[in-house]
Each structure stands twice: as C-alpha cells, then as structure tokens.
Image (cartoon, rainbow, N blue to C red):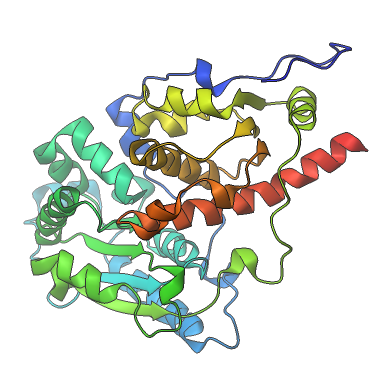
Length: 360
C-alpha cells in the first residue's frame, strides 16, 4: 500500500484489516431490516419501466399482499397473550419475485416490508446468508421461536447452490409457515439466461420442495437498472490517487487488496457488516484476481454489505470484471459472482466522484 501524502496534512484513514468486531446474536435479530440503501424504498418510489408491464403489475400484486399481511397487525399484546393462536391462512402465504439482475427486486421486497402494517420487531428482512448466520448464532429451535412471532419474513438473494443450507432454510420456512408467518423471497438468474424465457422460479420451487405450494411466483422482466443509460464503470485509478482520496475523505478506509482478502478469512462473514460500521468510502490498492473459490465467496459477502450500505469503492489494480476466473464464472457459484461484479461496478461509479472532487 502506498504511503501517506507528502504533506501529512490529513489524518490517517481507517483500515478494514484492523477490524474484527464481535456481533452479539441480539444485534443480528435487531438488524434484520431493509439495509440503508433501501430504507426509503416504497412502492411509489419504484419507477416501472413502461416497456415492461410486469413491473407495474408486481407493484399492484405486492401492495395487495402487504395489505393482507397487515390485517390484524394492530392487535394488542394482551389479546395475543390470551387468544388462541389462529390457524395459518389457507392458500399461498408467500411470493417469490422472479427476475434477473437490477430489475428492482430488492426495492420491491423492501417496499413490501415497509408497507406491511406491523411493528418493525414483528417483521424481518435479510439475505439468505444472514438468515443462515442467524440460525448459526441462535440455534434452529430458538430461530423458529423468534421468527415465529413475526408477521412477515423477507429473504433477499435466496441461494440455491448449497444443498445443505437450502434444506436448512426450507425446513425453517416450513415451521414459520405453520406459525402463520408470511414469506417473500428473491433470487437471481444468470445474465446469459435473460430473454430466453427461463428465470429462476422453476429452480426455486423445486429446491424448496414441500413449500412450493406456499409461494406465488411473480415474474419481473427488465434490464439491469444499474447499467441503464449509465456510462461504463470507471477504470481503476493508480495507487497514488487511491491513497490521496483515502487521506482526504473523512471516514474512508485504506487497505491493499491481498491483505484484505487474507483478513476476511479470519472474520466470520456475519461480522462483515459490523466491520464496515462508520466507513464512508472503501479505498483498495492492488486489486487482483481472487485466488480460489473460498476467497471469492467471502468477497461476495463483503460486496453485498458494502452495497447495502451504499459505501463507494475506489480501487487501483485490476478492474472488477477481472476479479473472478472464467472457470468461476461458469461454475456453481456464478450467480453470486455476477451479482458481486454488478454491485461493485455501481459502487465504483459512486467512488469516481470522490476522485474528481479530490482532483478539483
């Protein structure tokens, strides 16, 4: 990593490699809300593509679904305590948002969470990885008891590439459905499959097996809004520029990429979000292709946490499109890698303004 600017006028930036936070289980539960990027997401702030009628239809269907979940959400704790728990409603208690990258599925999922008339502590929003981390922290039975008191559980980026985790989460969802919890989920299909009439619903409904009857697939067509009418991601900068921006940006971190990858191997992925607490920009020097699959999967989780928090990423070295080998992009985890590239590209655009401001 390059040294500080010669004049030494700015305070040294933080280093992600110096952070290994402890995250208690109760924080994992309390933080199951839409991430900062989607705190303001509402159905009326979703802008449907006029050329994709399925997008406007999705807003209408999800608005109706939210209203059906919220019915009775205002009951008092005393009434809930003495009342016999009602039987789970018949028919689908879940929706599956089926679409490709960047069509606004997470925006719609967060809008559903916000629109459901229940207190925040009785509805949960998290990624598939965060849900499996919660089970690991609380244990299966405690997770069932905790989430079983909720009105709604939203799962973003449902992952079908790990059979063990898929069975675990499917079993958990079955218990929650029995408790009357409404469900909503998203996952991604491959960019190469878009336009071929095959999204991910068939895979999703097959993998969750006995739960398939509880989900209504809701297809959302469209192109990746992160690239819609926008310029290509800026090319990586040189080490000197990245270091200068890090020292000149309050709240920035500065790390060399290989050291960060090594550090991630010693921090549990459930703690990556807390590792970014207070960080306003991530500056990385010497970005290289990731050396192996385990390292790549950890980087995907970090990319998700950075994207959730809208933290710009300024880099030197290789472009994000060169992070993963061709073999990785053809393999079983390719969905995750394409998602990471898409999200890091969006954050690189945001970071370009930092470099321009510093130059000015």
